[in-house]
Image (cartoon, rainbow, N blue to C red):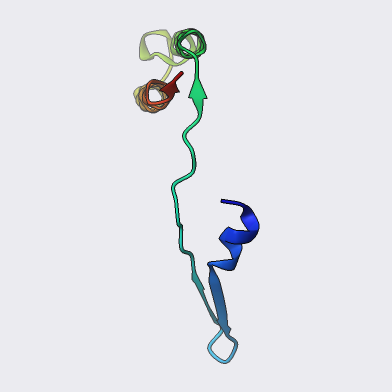
Length: 90
């Protein structure tokens, strides 16, 4: 779907007397999921893991980092790993 056809299916109205704006968005189709080769997916996972280990060495509580920073790093890693694994492989 092109942007112009997407934009034409959406409406927006403004009520200036109350200062409120109402926007209605209608999505006709989900955006296409990126497609990668198996080799690209493996490279992305390897780079993510390398970067995670690099950051873990800096932020781990055993080397002076905080538990909160490590929890955020772990959550970030799991989120990105899941995103890469969910990519469609060609």
